[in-house]
Image (cartoon, rainbow, N blue to C red; front, side, top):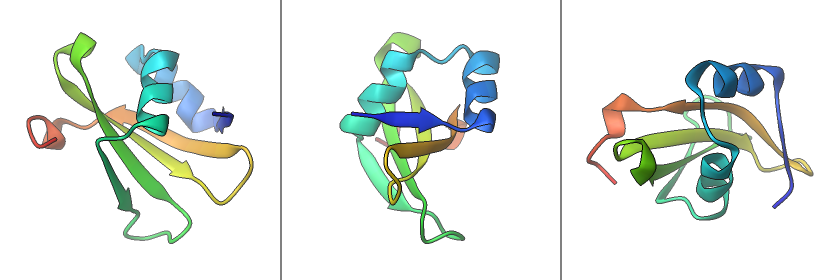
Length: 83
C-alpha cells in the first residue's frame, strides 16, 4: 500500500520510535476502523502491536487522497485491552 506521512506524523514516528512495519500493518489490516468525529475526510485505524507490549497503535489517515495520507500516529493508552 502506498501512503505518505505528514510532517506531524513523521515527528510522531521519530519521537515515539514507531516502526514503519507497524504503521503498514495497521493501515492494511486494522483491528478497528472508525470515522473521525470532527473531520469527515479522516479515518482512525487501530491495531494491536504485540511486539510493543500489546499496545494499540492509532493511525489517523485521509483515505480520500492518493496516496493515502497519514495525518498522525500514536499509541493510544485508552484502547489497550479493547481490541
